[in-house]
Length: 297
Image (cartoon, rainbow, N blue to C red; front, side, top):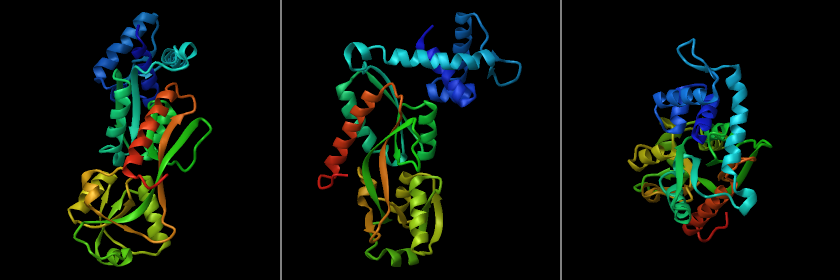
């Protein structure tokens, strides 16, 4: 019996299916099934109801999950009391909004892995609302994301930078008045399911700006790609650690009282890898400071 079996059964309970757990554990659905049969054989009990097409945790299985979580937490913090510092070897499951994947996360992860060469980092790109859910469920150790509308007592929010919203245009645009540009150019809308999309919609509505929206993108990085090809303009954050494509865009200020996207790291309050997450946060702040030497946010 290995700790991975306990992690797999926890993933199944949180996802509700073997296929969802397979995605989280980065294995095949068949491997998940084999692992659960091995766990049942080791324990000498049945944890799943297999009378239907999709196996479900039975009553005993549901009761077993909290105990499995206790074992996993104990395993991951086994050296805390002895050394005052958790063992920095194992896996860090990290969620991240897409706009941070190309530059901020790789550069920060590189710094962390230089300190802990045996560390394995699993990066999950998602929009902030979904990342919030996964951190709450415990399927992610931490997430680099936009600030949630509400942070419950069981979560820990650590902000590190405020990105002002700007008007993003292709380099050929010479006009500097955002209202004139929005009145004449096609508009590429960011999905309203994302924090950035909601902020952009609020600014447009507050200033009674009418746009001719021709496209809607599900991620900021895809939106930036469309803008760079001069397919339209968009309102988005002035990314603190930009990739080469974003660097080439025009970033036109929106005027006074500009809304901001606050980026930070979200963890559960009982995160067993908090010291490791704090080291990651230090690496992130270092990278952000390198890119923005004149700002403190």
